[in-house]
Length: 77
Image 1 (cartoon, rainbow, N blue to C red):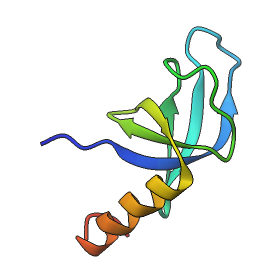
Image 2 (image 1 turned 90 degrees about the horizontal axis):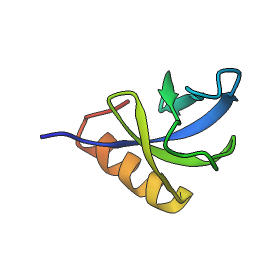
Image 3 (image 1 turned 180 degrees about the horizontal axis):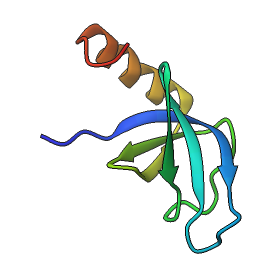
Image 4 (image 1 turned 60 degrees about the vertical axis):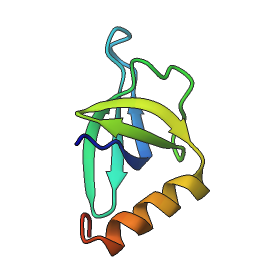
């Protein structure tokens, strides 16, 4: 089963317009994620990411609900 995980954007690098990237915080981990499909995201917003790509924006309440459920299942720290 595949899972998209919510994360918070902490910085954005648009220096390469063909491949914009964001540093995204997932709990205690930060990963570089492609935001090519989401041109309107901003620092501080939450996204759903799967295999290094942001799929959609989510509101903070939904992101926190999902992150808390994953913590309870022991899937993330």
